Image (cartoon, rainbow, N blue to C red; front, side):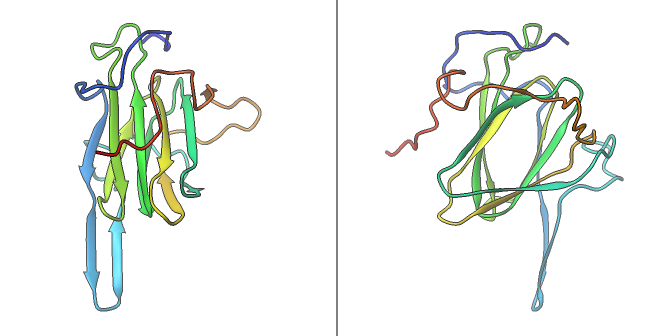
Length: 166
């Protein structure tokens, strides 16, 4: 696949970005609390390879965006609070080039989102409390040469992070 390129698009209704997968997460609750399964190595639709696991905390209203990876595939699940996870497909050879996908993920909607490599992504904490996003990427983070290509969160890609009231 080719690397992302510049393009002109708007955040209107788009098809699911090619290669993006989602699934509801299984929550097992009892009188003691609950367990939330995020990713299993016996799930052939989602698990391919283990790189590492990390948690990213985001304060209310904060945007963490944009970046993509050349090799790494991300598996995001928000386990506390809520985030709006946004993906933008700028891959020149993708059948969904120009597509923008929004996923509202967290305690009100437990979901795993698999983000393919070369797709720009980021999120905004939309809850009134801190959000915690767990990622299980396919590659470990390489401190000397990160597989991460960044853009500023505002005015670099055609997406408006402000809340849409209505």
